[in-house]
Length: 383
Image 1 (cartoon, one colour):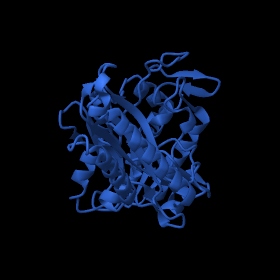
Image 2 (image 1 turned 45 degrees about the horizontal axis):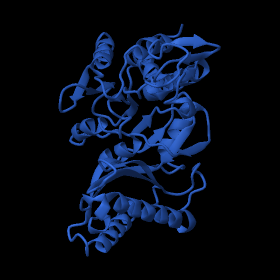
Image 3 (image 1 turned 30 degrees about the vertical axis):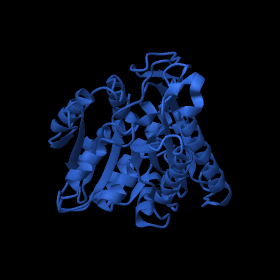
């Protein structure tokens, strides 16, 4: 068994679901690197239950290559797994387990490469950036980036190892998520016209969001390189009311915007807020305090690296490929670009189509391909 597969067995056994701590896994990685003489810096969460890990191999005074991976995984409850999701299971050339593709396979390849990198006496450093809470909105890595902003030397390039089948991905959409609450006026349902139904208010605004989506799809910015070529608006959760015979005074819903890098997400939010105010005004003759509130739930920026950039050429030199792609799901790459000015490319083993599903897997062939990329990285940085 290769070193990366052996490490993936170990990493999979840590049940690092986002709601739970990742500290046991982080401690394992810190100790593993420590035995190689590599010092790790931890950037903990506010409550101390989780941590990011930052480690450098090679000279600290030279712009280096960041290998970025998140340690958290999504839950398995309610999914029909054919094997134990936290025991890596090999079958027909595939390795089944939660996080095998998304994205402990990449982290395992990083760690397997570390002994080779230490011996190579790198002229350009390799940085490991292993984060927490990526799956709930790229939350954890921000605490690490806050520390790196003040570093005297910024990284040269960030490779985010999300599953792309080892293809270089240069762009992805950004995301904004909000919870909207409608405030109406309760009343007995037999006297419904003297109240203001907050569910109706919320439904009216959802209708307005759908109209804005239709306009964006028909007249907005488009990029055919994405599976969905335009910015999308989506309402994913709604709740309101207590019992049937009370006109509800409060209702809420959660919606997201997944926007193209070229789109103006702020302008879209402004359109939705303006629609909310217009709807509230129609209810104020009955209830002067009718209103909506907006609370931001999630936010991460889009990523957009020019396909002809040195960063993309560098990754192509590692993979041996020459194609590029764009993805609709988000990564930490946009945050590295925004916070540090570091260009980012997404490239890692596995297929996003099997992530978050039962029987998630990464193939042994993809792991071997990633191992080869790591070996080339060490060769190039020690030349």
